[in-house]
Image 1: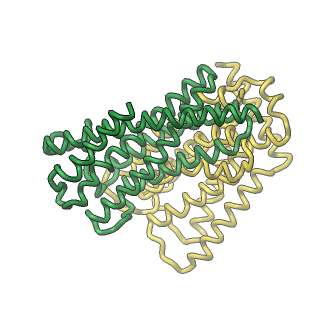
Image 2: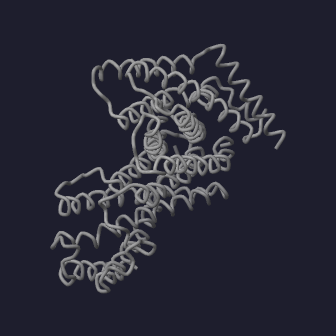
Image 3: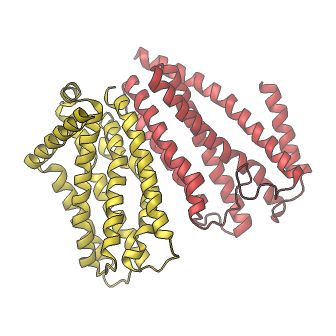
Length: 224
Length: 215
């Protein structure tokens, strides 16, 4: 286990350094996120979004920003021809964990940009920042956990970017719907007691199952 | 098998359309219940079979399991389309609209997208071993949203859809014995139909794989 964690840390550092040099994924994601929020603000100018609509719009922006960049860690290996080298250098579990940690970092960056910008551009008040932070953290784990193995699969396909969005959206729709439901109290929706908490627990269970399944399936996908 | 299945299905159709009393307060339109519920059942059963065969492929790397998994997914997709279409007919008769964004209707539609994505991914990979391994892994991943959407999500939010009438449903025992027996006969018939179609589709997949290998 110690060896896997060390390997994962090295994979994570490699990806972070590579990203720091090129800034490909981060700049694409952040530009997309800023442009989407600005577009939403422009299109919806003057419109009074209720809290549920606000939660739905912000999570859709987060999802599509994630879809533009979360395939990058594996697609980059395929495009630069370093897949075989990485397969020789690290165990599959370490690769999965390192790439998952890197995706989690990208998701955190997306959320740190999108949520404050969304509040500022659309004039949406966050009533319970602590709850929103908890939901955002669950969302980041959920989206990056599910997309790590999907990105590894898509890296072997043709037309990778479009296939990634097609493959990821239906798998991520259940947590997205639940995240909208769970975000309600953060934006002030008065819902029945316990409902957002149930939704958050459901997101965590769903993500937990997908992450465990991905952990076991990844070697079969990666080594093929 | 084909002859027994054919006779069985003819008997089910006669019982459902001519013998059974009108049900669910929907008059004759309610008889679609005998076809809608089995379509939904077979679609989920097919996805479970696809996941099982996918797991067997990953464990054994025998191409035959990939053929079986892909064949089950294809038939599952077909029955999901039929369940969605027959559900829309039912919705029109019961609620006056073909589509209501009811959680259960929407859940089945998302399952349709999940398995549509399975084929988009499968068709985009050229190398047969890679295609098989990735399809098998995706079939196993896809069963998670399928279970969640079909069994968990409709219980988390309010739905117009009647409660499940199959074992495990809340309204077990609330259905007339004759109607229940016809429904179970239909479920058995549709399951047999799935097995028959699955065997044919698996043979087609094997032939396609042979052609792939020759190219």
